[in-house]
Structures are given as C-alpha cells and as structure tokens.
Amino acid sequence: MPPLKLIRQAALGLSGVVCRLPEKAAATLAVTMGLALWHSWRSERIRLEDCIDRVYFRMNRQPPADIPSIVKRAFIHFALVSCELLRFPLLSAEQLADKVHFRQRENIDRALAAGKGIILALPHIGNWEILGAAIAHAGYPLNSFYLSQKEDELGGLLDHFRSYSGIILHDRDRGGVKALKALRSGGILGMIADQDGANNGVYLDFLGHWVSMPAGPANWSLKTGAALMPLFSLRKGVTMSYEASFLPAFADIETGSYNERVISRTLKMVCWMEELILANPHQYLWFYDRFKPRHEAWITAEKRKNGQMCHGMPRYGS
Image 1 (cartoon, rainbow, N blue to C red):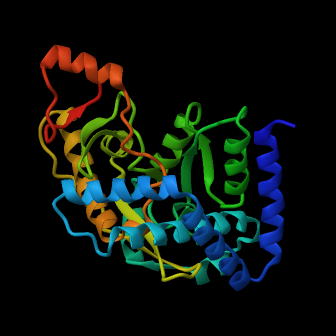
Image 2 (cartoon, rainbow, N blue to C red):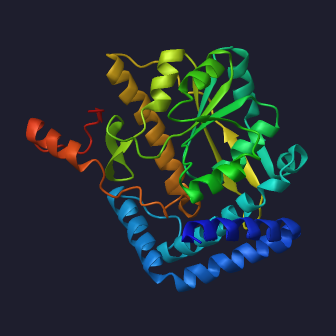
Image 3 (spheres, rainbow, N blue to C red):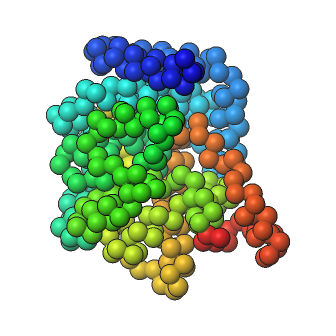
C-alpha cells in the first residue's frame, strides 16, 4: 500500500480513537504528543528558534518570552490543533458555541446588514479551521475556497475533516463564480490572508522578509464593495477553547490607481497581522516555512529590468 494511503488510514483510525475519548483525555494526549515531538524533532525545533529569533531581530522587537519557550508552546498548541481537527466528526452548534467565544460580534452583524457581503481575512494563527466551523454553525453564510487535490491522499484527508465544518466550500480553480455570487448576494467569504500570493500577489515586507502576499482579499473587496473585515482566534491557555474577535472592517479610503489601492489595502492587513503574530508567536504557524524563497524567476526578471528590488517598496504582481 502506498505510504500516503497508509497515513490517511492511520489518521482516520486515530480520529476514531480521539473521538471516543473524553475531551480532557484527548487534550492530555495531544499535549503529551506535542512535548514528545518537541523533545525528539531537534532539527525542526532549531529551525523554528532561528526563524522566530530572526523575525524579532529584523522587526527590532523584543519577543514576549524567551525563544525556546515560544517554540515549546508552539509544538503543544499545534498538537492540540491537530487533535481538534481529528475530532471534527463530533462538531455541533452547541459544542462550538461553548468552545469559541465571539467578541465584537456586532461588527459582523452590522456589515451583513449593509447587504454588500463580507470578506473575512485571517492569518494562520489560533485555529482557523475550528473558527470557520464555529462561524458557520452559528448560522452565518460562510463560504471559503479549498484547493482540489483529488490525487493527493493528504489533501483529500484535510478536505474530509473540513466537510464537517458547515462551511460552503468552493474549488479554488473552478468555484470562483459561485463564490462571487454568494458574496454579491450578501454572504460571507473567508480568505487566509498570509499565505503565499504567487506571481500575481503583492510583494512587500512581511515580518522582516520580502515575500508575495495574496492580493485576493483586497481585489475581491474593491471589485464587489464587500466589507473587508479582519478576524482571528486565540486559544485560552492549554485548553480546547478560543476567543475570536471580529474587528471593524477596514475603511474604504484608499486613493490612487487600482493597483495602488490593492497595495494600500494589503499593507493594512499586513500591519495588523504582524502586530497580532508578534504578540502571540506561540500560536502562529511557523511550521510552514513562509519565508522560503519563492518565485525566483520572476524576482530575477524584475532585478534585470528595474535593478535591485528594495524592501519597503511594495509591488503588485508581475
């Protein structure tokens, strides 16, 4: 049997086990596994320590705790996130209402009442998967994109657990029209705002690194008039409960050309996400190497055309 298929079967079997455990026992098991990984996975531990230390150095900021402690807490946090995902078959509206406490809910209700739809933009912090499920189970018309990976056992496994979330999922490659219709009918579209933006993203400094950020949240909000609202969740201690905040929508005050407005709106999101991440580094997804050099061919072409690209001078797309 192929290794990925074995991993899928093992994950589904483990899901069955943790779903039968009481929540407290499942959380204890997850914390134990997180600590075991932290002790044994030395290369990843060192990589994360170097990455986080470099971020705070480049941002000229003092971390909220010593770096090794942040990394240790990150291993524990994401072991709990994994356990929570495996327990998705148990999701219910009552359970999620008890686990995810919404703050500033009036902001999303006010934006919905305007009738132009909402784009919820959030980074990979806290537990974005359970947050989306909590919003959908609370009765909000939440849509989101997924990347169809029919040939990928691991991608299909993630989609399997997401099917319990109650979110209306659209294939990122083929579901754009349906998502747009949902947004224009006053619905909500959730977008991860800190992932790789590819060649047509907004190139800028994020946490002290020159990367491509997705232009989608700014683009969709500018083209449809939908409110662009920042959102995040943070774990309460070492529990399976969260506080989620709907922040006020970004004001639509950008001027200049369309591209300049996309850059300006994306910069607003980046500044907000940076402050959130720097204040809560143990709950951010450092395990994904966000700062790995990407799009080298495009960057090389830009350097030949315009000279050395300078940090602090955002550019939109290719």
